Length: 223
Image (cartoon, rainbow, N blue to C red):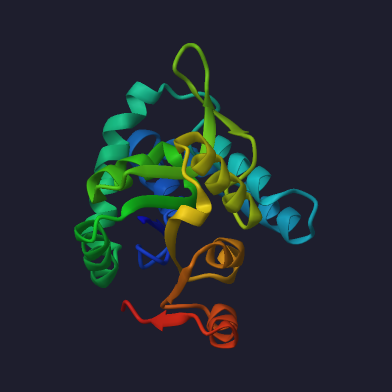
């Protein structure tokens, strides 16, 4: 039987989230003057809290303010690589990295499934030796400019399972013939954990811990 492991990234493999640190890394590396837009960000968070905009719209607004409306991917790439190195040096659970290696040694196909932008998650996935990446995708136009425009859905909550099923279809993987193991820290990944044969709550939030206890899922602490 083929074996696949699905890993959430932020706060599962990493200790802290990566989206905001990524934007600030890019600001300080490329255009510190963009900090003048910082006072506008709380208004976007307030609009999200009031359900006036979606999580995806919040992300692209912050991206537009701090990254710009169309920077060249080629110009961003060196900074993306340095950010990925920084994440794996100072913002990762060592036990999570060890588990990735255990799964790899067991012959499992490794899939990183994250709401973070593939723009930078790709560099992290590559360093960790993942076979596939599922993340939030951004539009890159014909001139190689990264636009503040998400392709499809923000890869969060139930949108993750849609993308996972699409990957299975693309690869020709038949679900009954595969053992799936899934790791996550957050209850928003409930659908992904339910999709798995073996669900593992990693350093979970209180809500996920309670759900895991109810469902009989394994709970581990990777701190």
